[in-house]
Image (tube, rainbow, N blue to C red; front, side, top):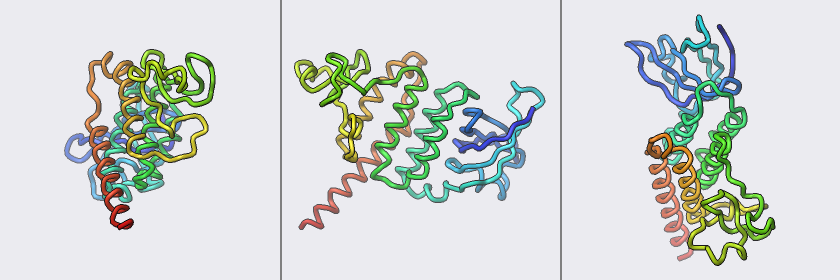
Length: 253
């Protein structure tokens, strides 16, 4: 058995004294594992870093075997991202979400989105919004997507301000006002036709929204915990926005 594909490295683990088990998200073969012989060598280690995009050749005697990888670099993104706590935590969070999917199950949209996100993970202002959008896409790929296109109660597409925890559908301001304490806020950057970026409050609201549906549909049924990296990401984003606020305050003074 043999195939060639493009992939983004999610992580590695040691195997024996010289080899490594490589975990990648591929364009056509989904999340896939394979053994890289000599993967812990000085030559291979810089290539086999999370976030790098590689050209892969996979071989195995039978399709159900783990098989072996040969990996050639296309883009070495890890060196660009390693100095940013936000980027590192974000990449770890994205990888944890992809591990919720069945191994070897193709998800081309997730691969393309992951590739775009990695290009922007060193842009701290954009990371929170990008990760939340990726989370919503993962929920959709798992069959638990939210419907933020129109009001669940009235069908209107205007002033969508809330999200129902029961249905996962958007609710307009007027329809949701009597039950606002029981609804999630729909962050402005996720609203229909939104053009504004996300501030810290919007990011925290968005993380709270996606957290609830991940817990209900994925974490609790599977008996697993929220990835630690996700909490680390949110903390790093809070520190970033706090520093930004202080910097802007000094400028204004």
